Amino acid sequence: MKFLEITGGLMVPVSNDELLVSERVRGHGAPLPRKELNEREQELARQLVHRGVLDRAFIDGRTYYTYNEVEYVERLMTVVTDAEREAMARMMAIMNGETPPPAPTGSQMVTESLSTEGGPGSPSQAEIHAMAKVLESLSKVTNEVIMESSPDERLAVKTRRDSNSVSVGEYKIEIYLNEQRAAGKQYYSIQHTGTGTVIADDITLYEVALAAVKMLNNNKYVNNPTVRRLFELDDRYTSCKIDAMSSKQAQKRAEKRGDMIKEDIYATKFQKALDTAGAIKRDIKAILEDASKANR
Image 1 (cartoon, rainbow, N blue to C red):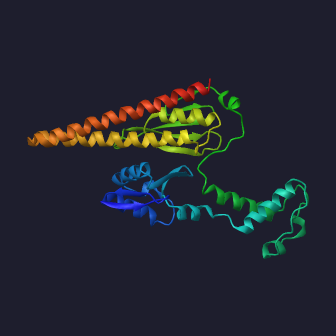
Image 2: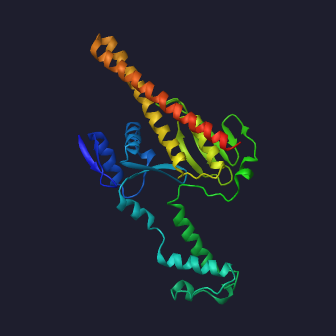
């Protein structure tokens, strides 16, 4: 048994296998894609997220893991340079018809011809390029879709269903099948229909996806505490389901060997995992019910 220190000075006990996964994420130097972990490591990562050692993020529609320490988070957020912030301020002033602050005397601005300067309300190509760079940088650290429409406008679109998806307002729940998936062959992702951005993937329970979509349509964001709790509950439910399956298999092996002690141990573990999963699902359904009431 080892102990890891996370943000806030908390000491969290971890097993040797969990330690290896956490050190792999910590030493990666950038958010670690979930697809680079095998199935066992993915399950350990889910458990470490639940215990606060790792954080889970959705970037460009994919799931990533980061280590929960202040220094690492601060390093991830320093992606926009001072020069890019100045370029953004200059461009916003031009688009608002105001006198922009003096431009830097760097080579890019000096070599630009006068014909590309559009004057008030019309930014130059260099300034457009600078703004694009800033937006590209910011997109690498955001995991939420910000919409300006009102809840009523979003919910005016009726629910639409087809064989592989369910569309609710401005979001779509994609349905996937994988016969080899340990937590269940059917799983889900949430996608914004306007931009194609994947908000969350690898969701085990449809109720989680539906509740999240209802809240997103009601002007809640991905970092909303209730939305985040939904995804955490889904992770816990997934872990319980995998634990139940593995315990049941171990129980059957013990039964074949005639090992009654191990058979009873695994039967108890199986029942505990089922009971925990049932309690988690009841919490999820309560959140879904509240989200449905808010949309009426």
